[in-house]
Amino acid sequence: MVSILQRHSDINGANNNNKKKMRGKWVSGKVMIGLCIASFLVGSLFTSQTFFFRPHPSSDFAHHHLISTNNMKNLDAAEHHEFDHKRKLVEKDPGDIMGEIIKTQQAIQSVDKSVSALEMELAAVRTSSSNMVNGAAEKGKSSKAFVVIGINTGFSSRKRRDSLRETWMLRGERLRKLEKEKGVVMRFVIGHNGDAAVDRAIDAEEAEHRDFLRLNHIEGYNRLSTKTRLFFSTAVSIWDAEFYVKVDDDVHLNLGTLVSTLAKHRTKPRIYIGCMKSGPVLSHKGVKYHEPEYWKFGEEGNKYFRHATGQIYAISKDLATYISINSGMLHRFANEDVSMGAWLIGLEVQHVDDHSMCCGTTPDCEFKSAAGNHCVASFDWECSGVCKSVERMKKVHSVCGEGDGAIWNVHLI
Image (cartoon, rainbow, N blue to C red; front, side, top):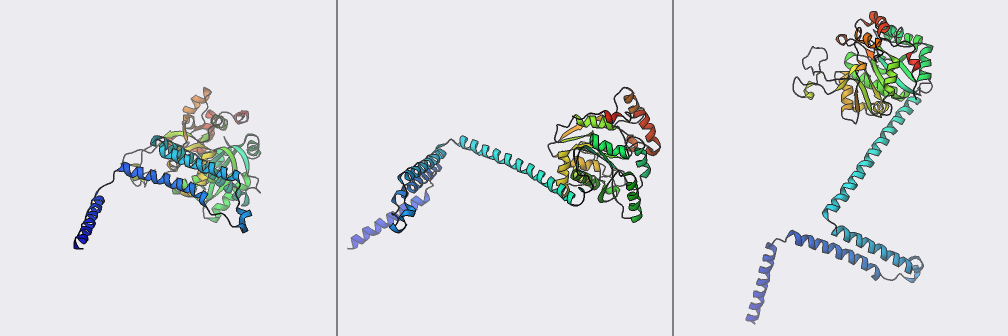
């Protein structure tokens, strides 16, 4: 009896030693993968076979659960197809599987882009509808146009505005006719002052000329980026135009040449046209055009990325819509032209460097006009506009202008 117990104890000890040895061994990766695949296939086979061993439904509910022979065959075929599909996935080369994954990712990205485009269109429609509800439609301003030209101006610039009205900017019924026949809209763009008397003066000027676009904005030099952003957002919600132009009120403009130039680019959905530059980032306080956020542009002495000079530039409808939709997220730098460049630099946008938009005044634009190459815009770099524009605008217009009838001879197809 003792010997039997002893043998039993020895056997148990041997089994325990074997278990410990087994626990101490590592199972190879290939064996593990093989076991996983085998378990997957056995599970699939077991699932497909259990269908045939289900208990027969009770006679009370037989008429609800009876499966025809054809249905059985169809189910069997479907399950066989599923099993075959799983087998092929397991047997597939890893490269083929990665190819399928890449194709799926590309399809998802394509859908994401489509959804993003639809969201932009929807937001634009909502913005337009909101403005119509707020009274834009009643004023007759919700209409199609070829280009909307926003002339940036200030409360102390009445004489500048009058100098433009007397030269290249049409006024009165001719301004309305230009909008109707050529789709060219021009407005002086201005916000509010906070001083009731100053605001009333603009209201009176608007009643006389009807050539203002009033923004819900408090004017200030350090708020030009905000004003520009608001101009495009407001303009795109009122006028459905192909292009939107921002120009300063001390710049000479040839309307016919501008419209002809823009018409060459009308098939391009995302375009940014102007005189592209890359000026220095000024880090020292107290200097003109100081950039408080200079550190964002790298080391001292660096230059800005390419952007259009702020005297005049044009953007297409898609870009104006983008600014309108994302206005709350667009960062504003100290300089308005830099801000515009920053908003567009990371997008799929075609930058067009057009030097006819930054001609000098006499004798530069005069020589070009004599040769039949009229400039889109003329100004003096040292003044960031036509120097002493109130006194000189008529002179510049007489020697650099394309002729008052040029805009009426432009044909837009």
